[in-house]
Image (cartoon, rainbow over all chains, first blue to last red):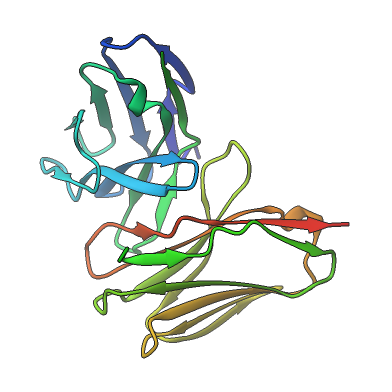
Length: 111
Length: 110
């Protein structure tokens, strides 16, 4: 049982480049989330999707877009990467039990 | 004021010590309270989950929620070097997304 799978695990981008972070869950969860984690800042919510077909902004949405492709998949796109977006990105999902399950993270460096 | 406040530490204790980790929060609508453990370079994993007020025990771990004081705690008894990790409190109300504390880095020294 894979749970929440994120790809890629590592990525280096140049300023201004674009990329999409992929996330898929196999637990039939309705809700999916994207967080970023920076030293001393904890986990901050970027965007979330309460159910297939809906997305909402979180605490730090600027510079990002998301797509809830289907119930399983929730992608995060950086249209024009900036050094301030250097971070570890975590995808998570939750069902009716309220508990969020996390992927292993994507380490992104923007130079 | 942040919705969830957590002392980031770091906290260093000798093996066998009792560890107390705490969070305070401001949103009275929070009903679901969780503690996640995160090892270095890994994703957070759920450790304890409590609904509303009260205590919950699981082996060496005890979670406490005091909604009247807006205060939650995690106690670790007989701490082990394998407990060395960052501990994050998290909470939510209804169908809102989880809100996390900043995490407390714990080191248990053998």
